[in-house]
Image (cartoon, rainbow, N blue to C red; front, side, top):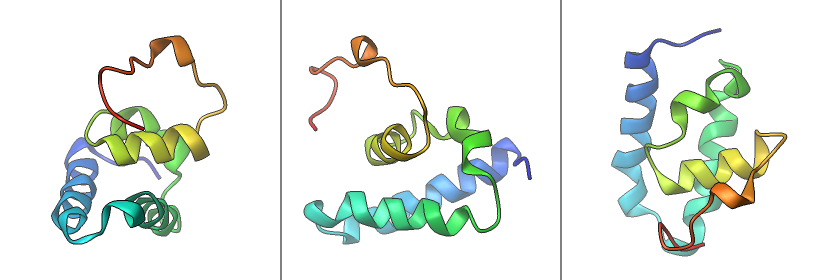
Length: 82
């Protein structure tokens, strides 16, 4: 299933609404579970390009779990902390 930009934005907004209530050490795991739950309805790999850029935690989970190739040269350590 391909999602519209509005639907993608709604899912990201939902994540952003609950994220402040999750402890820092649990955010990655919570985001991973969030995306796994979405995967029951949609193919995350089809929309990874649209999801990347909204939130650093989502970006990390996508890089670690949904992309086959990560170009480490593109990551700038000054942009965000790991």
